[in-house]
Image 1 (cartoon, one colour):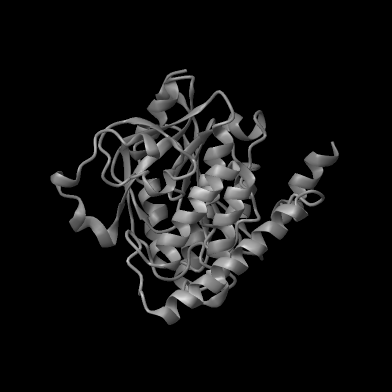
Image 2 (cartoon, rainbow, N blue to C red):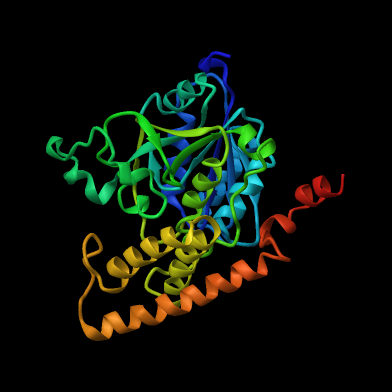
Length: 332
């Protein structure tokens, strides 16, 4: 099937976003692409009146499909939308992005290759746009970028200008074939909490076990605004809860997918960067700060270990379990 005929479901989970959400949806609707739908999964309890009016109007006019949920989970919202999507390609965006013309077509054309199961797009972070000079351009990612023990510190989807296979995408700009979910049985793990850091890495490692690959296409690029509030952040990044979920999510990914040797390398790098604060993290090196981060590092590991043990009898898909459509499919 030609890429121009592929129907794309654009999925936008949102939490606590206002004008950035409106702008993101409008950017999608402006795309000159012949076949797509927009699915907005809104987990916001109370929007500003202007945002409510916009969403209601767009839904009433049939320009978007709007679903309101009373819980906040990024992977849960993604799964919820997938079960309602009609697209052959499912494209996931954050609710604070700016899209160039031709963005949907750039994703779609890659699926002419049958071995491509997912597409990772290039992400320009708004706060780092000044860093995108030509002397920082990367052609080929290093071999370490395909090593699941340390890849997460070598996958550069900002400065890389050459299309190539990658291990994972960034959650604000990634697409997958419908078959990944409904034939391969790969879904987002709803045990990833808070900002859901590493949920897209977890997803990529699952695809690695199939015959599909994830292809990086720098032409499928966008600007990620990186708003300080809202989005998948149901908790502030400076809160104690956020620190716990950050380490929990990293350790959980390792326990699920990595060998003991790979785990030691991954957790060692996590300790070096996020606890000791060495580059590229560049955090405070004060003994008090290091000690406090070490506490969360240890507690996060214990929490992730318990999540993995619970997985023996509870798959942790708590959001999907609340979805009547999921429950209906499970019983049929």
